[in-house]
Image 1: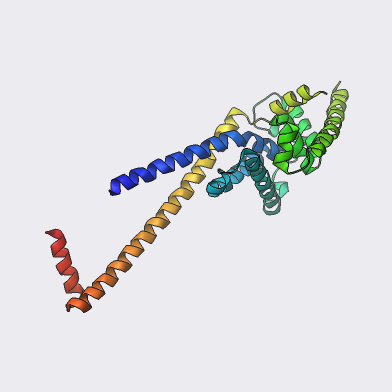
Image 2: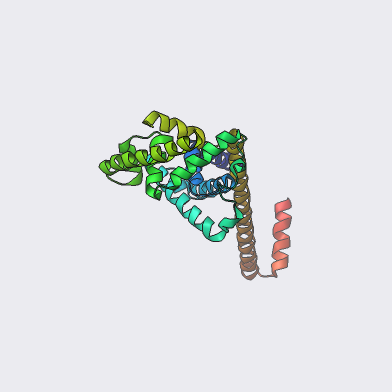
Length: 182
Length: 83
């Protein structure tokens, strides 16, 4: 009887881990991209993703039952809180600024690539927090306006309007960069 | 810059590298395993404590009911259990 119970318990644990594993696979790229626009260093972004996902794991019974837009909303809110805690507890000076170290992004790319990556991140940082989330959900996660509106609990019309403004602003910022280089 | 160009730019520039993906996953699951182990230890300690508390109460009750000290009741039960 005891061994049967133990076997059942292990099976339940495995099922639960598998569910969390798929949850992690589904969301961690968006979390990383969002974190990158909130911090000056990719290592800090990794830590933020890890902390956010750990909080999701601790609350998995509640989070995994949510529909997909609500899961995204929960993660974005948690990441926002984590990044606020991060800035408060860890001194921002611990991480060097973006402008100082284009080679600091440890993705191993060419310097040009690293500079472009920093320019994209800097351009995104010129947007408000809510606009950055809208842009990432649209252009990184490739959601449509209705799905974004559902995730961020805002009217679909506002999402469309803000997307147009954000695209214009990002285009200007990134085109200016190309002009300066050219 | 149109929608497709922006999508392609953001997806290539903000995507974690393979190395980063592995690192985030490994560190996260190591922390989850560590937290899981701590919870398991706490549960086991709780069960241990509960078992011995109930065992102690049973011994005291048996001692009073049957007559005799807790030690003699424990020794008798142990003998029965061994048989």
